Image (cartoon, rainbow, N blue to C red):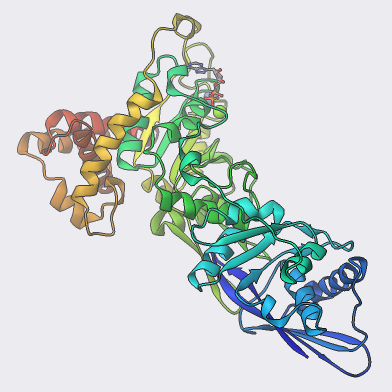
Length: 513
Ligand SMILES: Nc1ncnc2c1ncn2[C@@H]1O[C@H](COP(=O)(O)OP(=O)(O)O)[C@@H](O)[C@H]1O
Ligand SMILES: [Mg+2]
Ligand SMILES: [Zn+2]
């Protein structure tokens, strides 16, 4: 007897249909699996066998062959347990053959027949809907994340016995429903706001410009000056996520099994802050069983690298690809995988190894040579991808206590969104979405400046010893500042302000005349 059960596997962030064929023939009892890596299969066979027996069914004492097709896609994970068990029970005639048709199944079995959560049920539900399936049967714990997909019945199940009864028409299961709209309007649980940051007007302004143009940003300041506090609030002034962005980011969290069960849709921009001890695979993804890294978990959100010079050189090196391509490509022996990685980079560092170079309350004992070596840890090519540098000075206790009304994130976000909508119109029907992504030809076209602004810019470059690359960067930031004022032309004062955000180029010159 031959049975076919449909399941799914994830490659990159998309899921593919996998057909689980089970053939039971007379002969000595064997259980052979084709099309799965050996170690995974061995364990899976044991679980399927025990789960069937412990659910009160007879495990056939015949020659069982399970084939997972297509053979050429790599199938990882434990989600094939349930389809394999159902295939066996269908081949023995317990489940009517047509009962399985039209459904996609996934789930790990425990030895007693309970169904355990698996990763990637959202992309799999998307694949099921695309293929026109009427429903998907998933572990109960994964039901809400799969139910984010519209026009697909999602059945969350607890045990193998329950699925068998369902397919035999003995019990019914209510399809899971989630209200995606409601999730968008729910506030973030740990609400944070710019209104809590006292003073630091200069830094706040830099973050607003960064948010408005999608510019990466580096904050330099002594310990305790509020760099982490500011970075954490950046996502609160970025435009709200669109539904498509939410789905993309949620797929990544689904694949790594990091979704919050109560909030199956990631509706707020992620903020990721990996520790500086992270490996390159942890940061950009990869590993033996490839999985997305921090840059992809930050997709459509913010990646914060605190203490930037402390990261290993090779780790900072691998950041360049996603910063350039907005995605990560991981080469495997037989194939390559791509994970999206479009994020805003926010980095923070101390001005010197001891941290107190710019702090009037502490003395810095670092030598110029030590300071230079510290800063040199961040390679030029990485710095080149960070448009905005901003100094965050220590705040006096008096200023902290002064309090006073600070602007809320909602107010700043309004301005950011207005500037973004100017950019959407500007870059309509192009691959560029914001000012930060402009290439030279876009800069030539959209960042024309008058003679007086040009004079300010060239004199600043001479005076501060900025590189030619800094020239384009200043033009981009000037464009964003003008957009914040809804001005079509870049004026002198836009350029004057933009020049300030290349402070590291400046101090390089000072340190290394
Ligand atoms: N401008 C500020 N307004 C309010 N609180 C601040 C400010 N700057 C610092 N703090 C307080 O000091 C703490 C340390 O700031 P933090 O962001 O960790 O500094 P850094 O990352 O620069 O070392 C914060 O948690 C916050 O309580
Ligand atoms: Mg900090
Ligand atoms: Zn120092």
